[in-house]
Every structure is written in C-alpha cells, then in structure tokens.
Figure 1 (cartoon, rainbow, N blue to C red):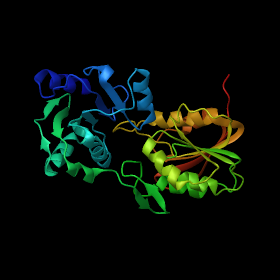
Figure 2 (figure 1 turned 180 degrees about the vertical axis):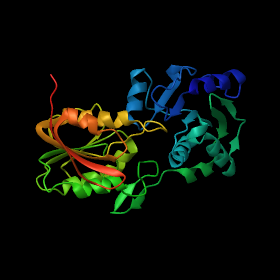
Figure 3 (figure 1 turned 120 degrees about the vertical axis):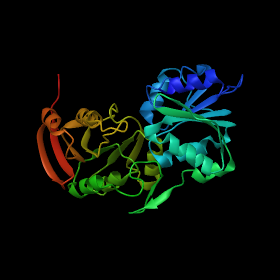
Figure 4 (figure 1 turned 30 degrees about the vertical axis):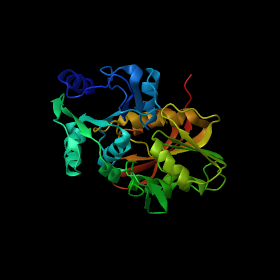
Length: 322
C-alpha cells in the first residue's frame, strides 16, 4: 500500500527526489515495501525493535539524516505529531498513511498550523502529501510528562497518562517473594518493574521492551542497579540465565485489530526463559484465549485476581519440549 502511493507520487511528479542526498523514512512497519526509493540513499528510523531489525536485515541503514523525510503515519495522534517535529530539519516532509490511521486529520492539522501542504494523492485506502516544514512543528515535539506515582512518560508510549488498570491489578497480586532473577517482558515505562523490585530477594531484573522511547522512560523511572535494560523483541529474547519469575502485561495489538497471537508469543517466550520451578505472573483481558495455551505449557495454572475486564494468572513449572 505504501509502495503504491510512493510510486504514484514519483511518477506524477508530486514528489521529486533530488539527484543526491539521503531520504529518511520515519517509522515504517515491517513488511512495508520501500522499493520505489533508491535503497542506497534510504535511512530507516524507527524505535520499534522488530521493525528496526526487519529493515536492517534487508540492508537499509538505520542512522543518518537527509533533506527529505517521509513520515509513515502511525495510529497514535501524539506519535504522528512527534514524528513531524522530528522531521523538522528536512527540506520537505512527505506524509504517508492509511485513512484509518488518521492521515487526513494529520494533514488538516498541518494546514491549521500554517504549513504549506501540497495536493494529497489518494491510493490503496490512504493518502500521501508533501508538506513544507516550518518552525511551528516544534510545538508537536514529544516532551516528558509526570504521571501518578512519580513516573515519567512520553506522549506516544503505551498508557502514557498513567498506570493502566491491568498492570495495577497485577502489581497488587504479586507475592512477597518472586525469586532472585526476574523478568518484566514488555516492560514499558517501568510501572511493573518498580513493583517487582519492591519484593524481597530480587537480585536481578531484566526489563525487556521493544519500544525505544518507553525504555528511555524506564531508565529514568527505575534508577536501581539491579535493573538491566534490553531494547529487544520480548517474543524472541533469550536470557543469559533462566528466570525464577516472569511478570508481564503482554500487548495484544500489532495493528488496529486485536491479535491474540502476539500475547501467545509472549507466553511462549516466558516459558522458554523460566527455570524448571519458575512462575509466570501475567494479566490479560478476559476475552483473550490464553487459558488453553497456558495449560499446555505449564503444569499448574490458576487465576489469582482481576476484575470483570481483566484476569490475573499464575502459571508455574514450565513444561519442557523435547
């Protein structure tokens, strides 16, 4: 879909690439086709580790700047605006995205900000338009916020306005002891990690988080020498030594629609990383079909808390596969 709009823009002359200079593509998603652009001049920038790894594996550079910035519009309005502010140093900004992700709203907001916006090209359920950057874009820069509990967050990270209900329920249900080695998979900005480190006997905590901005916040929020921060995909992360406990509130969206497979991948990763006597402590929406998977991966599975919307589960003694 993105490639179709880029090709149309280049063929129609709506987008003219200079003969030299790099092209920065901000926040493309794994699977996006950038072949309409000269690969040797493309720099892909994204803070989401699976997407970063996808493009790096294809040979794209991931560091640098350029005179053209292509903003791949994400679903979150605050994140889209922050990307526009990040592109402020470019000579032109190309805004590209799906209508369902708010590209039309972003273009209207650019006009309201006083920016020059070219004619939008429509194709493949999305739009692409060239925007002339201006100093007013600095108003959209992502600035740290202080939320309940003294935590720092950024506008585009998950639950940026404070602890989400599921994580609060899980933190309250954690036992007094979790063991010496613990992991927080999908650690976000560190809410659960602080609760983990308050438990007796914790000597090491691996915070595994795929979103770079969330991990930046976690480093501020968790100034504890026992904490180790990993910018990594939790579904494929392998610990140096097996954990005694894993604590997690796994995500279940890869796009607009819910994807239970993502949470299931988190559960499988937790099972792989746990010691034979270890336990998984997790919270999830009750409608998600995790129970059937948990009983195939752990010898003991029990509900230990929650409310009408969320289920807090303890799963112990991972079953090893041969």
